[in-house]
Structures are given as structure tokens and as C-alpha cells.
Length: 517
Image 1 (spheres, rainbow, N blue to C red):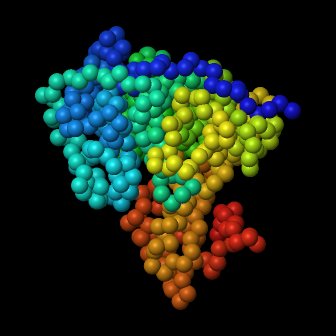
Image 2: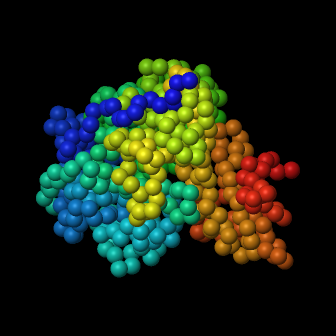
Image 3: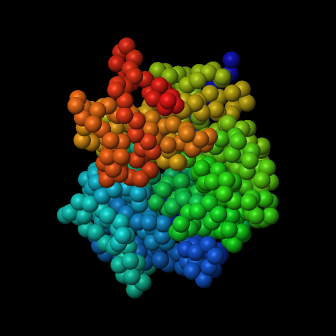
């Protein structure tokens, strides 16, 4: 039987010894096409006069002037900068400015609570917090330097332009928080080389070129949008478009048409909503070449329905924050429903045994997906987690279960731990459970992801009341909303007498997913 491995070591072009994300995204493009739109921030789907159009020259100018302000505020190479910002041009500019001077940018979801931000500030000890005026930071600003986004950008208007720092490819560049198997999110630290490591997906997933206009349905403080909607269009000399307004399903076909978008990126749920609420046809998205999907599994019925309605395909990619997307189907091939595709050219991906060992198992067998440590897209490591070793030898073990077939296609089989995929987000069951266990009257909690409808994943929390306590699901939900980001709040609360357990005392989570009678 053939081993379930694509290659024994990364086979793509190695990153140059010196590499800087911001410089790669802006310097050459500004020289070649200074007046070409690099980033468009749309505020009104019907009113183009409200659009913010940032050409390559204007965007680079803003990035280098903000870099100067950051340096003047005492930010040094390796310092952390928390970006508590919304879906704005300021978010893109500040992120690039931080990488330009060798600082570590930390984009944070706007849905996080003040308590979340306080934890992340304590974890990373940032030299600066850049904050939108309408987003809380809790106690994070205590004894730390904070600057409002508007103030930072205003100061940059009269600042000189800084120079790009000559960073090494392995120098830290940005850190993103992701839910893991513990009750607290963990920081994933990436190097400047991470952008170089995205190169295999340009042909292996996007088919992107400089003439493309990429519309992303997400927000720039989410790594999917940050990469696919901003960095990848920029480094390829294309145009990225994001939208700040109400995300109704009918907005997206209208924006595709108005901007003449050639690529549209979203989570599969967005495609399902568009199909449900919009009259779709090939003429509804006349310029669209194809769609891109990531963040959650793309159901075959959604992909098929989209193709039948629009005449365009959706190409799925599979990945995680630690290594970005590394499995996909290129637009030159026909997707196989149920599989995101094969490891991209150059990637060394293996399916390892469930328990231990570094020898790939056979094709057709279920095991854990692993990526070789030589891949430049792979993270530097987990921030402040010296005891957490996700490697087996030279293989980074992702925790995702899958089968690799004889043709090299990968068929995901869920997670090997308790991390849930909900609406495109990775959510730690342990984190949600820890919060709900603190709710008045709650003795035990177990949460699982369920699918009330095909392609829709939500959180169900099963709670056991303390002796003599009368638990009201509404009160538990209210408690959860006050302490969790919106996407982590359970969709339903089920009060039960006891949680199902094995003879060894382990919770039988599969039973918690059964329909409620």
C-alpha cells in the first residue's frame, strides 16, 4: 500500500534570507503601477462615492508614515502591537506598518470581549495598543500605552516616511490568537517568511494574477481575510476589496457586480445564504471567475447548487492558523465533492498514526494530518507555551483527522481534540465550558458543535444543575453573552440530569449531538 505522504520535505523555492512582508506587498508594485487600486474599502453597496480607494502609491505612503509614528512612540524591532481595530483601512495600514519596522502585529477580532483583550495584553505585554474608539479593551490599557486609530493616522499625515527594515525571513512578524484544546486561546507566532510560504496557494487555489479583483466577505482582523483579502492580492499586484456595512446575503452579488470582482472569498455559510436569499444566475455575477471557500467544510450540496445556479465553481482550501491553507484544488481541475483537494505543489504533508510514530500510514487509513517543519508557511511556535510541542520528529501534527486516497486527495474526518469549527471560527470547547461552569447554579457543562441544518454549525451546551438549583437556559445564555465573544456563545442550552460518560468517566460527546426529543 502506498504511504499517505505527498513529499518527505518542502520542495518549493526557499524564502530569501532577508524578507519583509510590507516591502514585498508594496515596494515593487508601487514602482510598477503606482496609481493602480491596491485596496478598496466599501461602505455602501450602492454608493461608489463612499468608497475608500487606496492606490499602491497612497497605501505605501501611509504605511511608511505610520511606521515613523510607531518608531517615534518607542516601538522597536520585536515589540508587540495589539491591533484592536475594525474592518478599516487603518487596520491594514497599521498591520503593514508594524511588519515594515520589524515589530510584531497582533490583529484581534472585533468580537472579543474586554476580558479577552486583557488576557492577550497580559500574555504578550505589548509596547502599544492601537484601538478603535468604539471597541472596548477592558483592563488591557492599564499601565500600557494606548493610541486611538484616528489619532495615529492623523499624526502620520505630517510625518516623514520611514524605510523598510531589512528583516530576516525568520524574524517574527505577526501573532494571531486561535482557540486550542485548552481553556485559553494561544498565540501563534509567524515569521516574515509566512507570506513567502503562501506562494503555493496562488496557483494551487486562487489562480490569481495582477488583473484580479478579489472581494472578501470577511473582516481584516480575521486571518482568512488578512491573507486572502489583503496580503495575497497585494503581493500579486492585484486589488483587494472589503466591505464594512451590514452583511446581508444580497450585498455580495451586488458588490461582485459593482466592483467587477473576478474572485470572491467567503466561508461556505455565506455561499449557502446567498443561494437561499438571492436569485442567482450566471448574469448575476458576470465577471466572477470562481469562488474561494475556507474556514469550515464546504458541503457538496452547497458547491453543486452554486455551480448550477451561477455556472461558476467554488474552490475549497483546508488549513489552520499555524500553517495557513496548504490543501486545495487548483482552478485548473474539477473539485471532488467532499474533499478540499490535495497538498499544494511543494508542500510536504503526511497522514501519521493516531497515537505515535513518524512513519506515514497507508493511503485509505484514518490518521492525523502533519506538515513538515521545513515549510516556510509554518509558524515559528506558540507564544509563551514552551512546554507545548506539536511536533513528532520533523512533522508538525495538526490535530486534524483525515484519509489520503490513492490519488493524493485528502478527506477530512474532523478533529482529534475538542476544537470546534463554528461559522468559520475555531472555538475551544474547554474555553466555553470554563465560562459556563462559572454561571450560577451550574454544576457541569459539556459543549459540542451540532448541525441543525446541512452546512450550518452551531454550539450546543449541555448543563447539569447544582443540587437544588433551578436552571433557566435563558439565564445561562445571558451569562455566556456577558463573558464570551459572540461566535463562542452557545446557540442552545440543554439542561440535563447527567452527562453521558464512558466506564472510564470520559464524556461521550457523540451522544450530546443526538437530536433532542
